[in-house]
Amino acid sequence: MLSRLLQWSIGAVGRLPLPAAQVLGAGLGSVIWLLPNRARRTASANIARCFPALTPAAHRRLLRQSLQHLGRTVTDSAWVWTRPPAALESVVREVRGYDAVEAAQTAGRGVIFVSPHIGCWELVGTWLARRTPLTALYRPPRLRALEPIMIAGRERTGARLVPTDARGVRTLARALKAGEAIGILPDQAPPPGRGVIAPFFGEPARTMMLLSRLARQREVSVIFCVMERLPRGAGFRLHLLPAIEEVGAADDIAAATAVNREVERCIALRPEQYMWSYRRFRRVGSRRGGQKEARPR
Image (cartoon, rainbow, N blue to C red):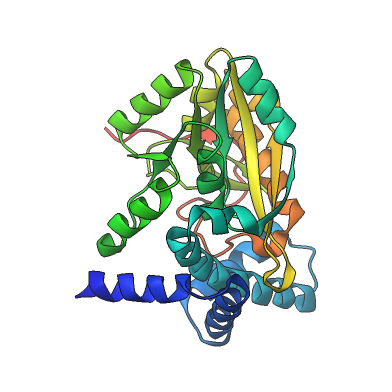
């Protein structure tokens, strides 16, 4: 029953023109903004933690805008999962930095496409998969009925999805060695006992090491991706930003710090489009600096 209801709801949003879908999403985000809920509390706390110099009015404005974009993310995802590939192509109005991808492909290097939770990240993989073989890591959603819908939506333009387990990581490594592309979201907090603690906007945050360890392979290019949402449902602008070399540093703390710094660079493009409602700082104390986490015995 739940699966059929989800399919119907996602299909209904997918049939809307993009501007109408985003108006619906902004309305959903406004409800989240108006009512007490965990997403609003978490986003407010994260914005205060990352931008302590904001005035109360500026904090309130960024919080409201970010929650409206959170709602747009929900409807954008439904739209991307169900629209024909040609429609997805038509809404990407501008691409900046694709020459870095072409240079890596010409040199026969594997490419790690890194997409933080900003803008319409769901569209990044579907757009790139039409241009290069792409294997992408995914974390199963908490709502299990959503998983087959999400996988089908992401794979229909040619991407191959693998889960966040040892087999999935091995598949990513093999794709890179073959000179293919892989996709990773870098700002998901790893489980306790994994990853390292590294600064994110000057605050300690649990940070994954998978990206950096894959980036240490020879002949690999790392490119951060932001699918910026344009105003009034006009479409999207894709930014492709080559990463700094320190992302693949041998020292885990230095590498994780560089990854977080690159995520900050992406957020600086459109801070209001970042998903501040994600609990990036959960179970981490304040301002402790970089350190490794002890693995549970």
